[in-house]
Picture 1 (cartoon, helix red, strand yellow):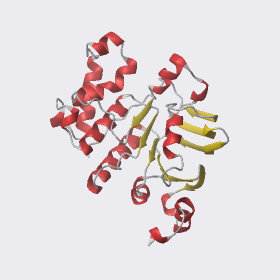
Picture 2: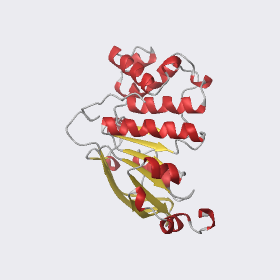
Picture 3: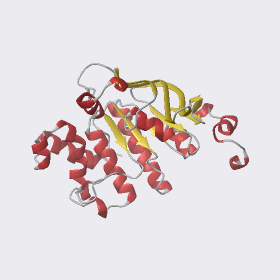
Length: 267
């Protein structure tokens, strides 16, 4: 794969390292019945962290608390040194600009072209009238073309999103997230609807952007083998708790039994 260009400055424009600190995060949808039960971990710089666990254990809820798509009930979430749980209004919108998100269902604007979708990553940094007229700064346009080449879609710049395969759509989603020059990238089941070969390619792309641009990468993923192959660190969740946090080669069957329950599925 082509080498991804390094960006020296962190998204917030200062010297604060690109980092994520999650401290004692609790989320209750129903009072007294927490889905997240005091989740804590830290990630800094070029690190790929895979979060594994059964459906319903709170993995997606955790990511949505981090980007404040849903409100945590308690706890702190620091992105590049800023506690985003204390932000609201324009300050929160500004902070979200530096949290890149890659979605399971891609979340592209289907009628727009590949380059227009990638440029959506700059909407938070572009005056409304410019975005409405699609008059992005030339530097943003050049960067979008560059990222489209990096994700292997150079021949699809003007293709509509609804004409692409699932793997191609996810590549657009990755380029859009990186277009934000984010402080962290989060991916919520980015390979769940893809075939095995494409899944590996998508994980390679995400890893490369994290490594070269020094961006922490947090991935919710069901495929334990992919997690062990590509992650520097695995966090295992069960029933709203972190029950494993370590290197992939430290993850044993006993841990998987604790995370997922039972043992027949390990055969």
